Image 1: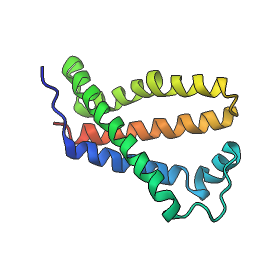
Image 2: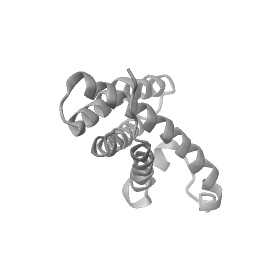
Image 3: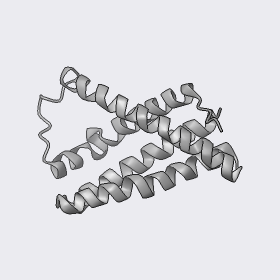
Length: 141
């Protein structure tokens, strides 16, 4: 069986991921709380010029996630046969729960990170994957 992937949907899912992250970690949303919990200094060092290499790396990581999610969604839809949107969003949720949240929790427990930081990360990753899933479901192959 061939897995059909809509590459435009993958790219737009990456854009959705970047938008969610930029809103989630904005100073006026959760940025200040995140910086305090993660012990990140939010002084003048966080300029676009300094952030560009990091954003490029995040773009590539999001591209991998969106591409893999598109595969999962195709297979899920092929198996369940619900609407593309339902299968995409539910697959994104289950991928978040079993692959993302469980791994973040495991690392954060051993690294003794603050529970509030873990919850903040959980929320960001959940909203990100749901947004990516919605884009992939909307622009199904």
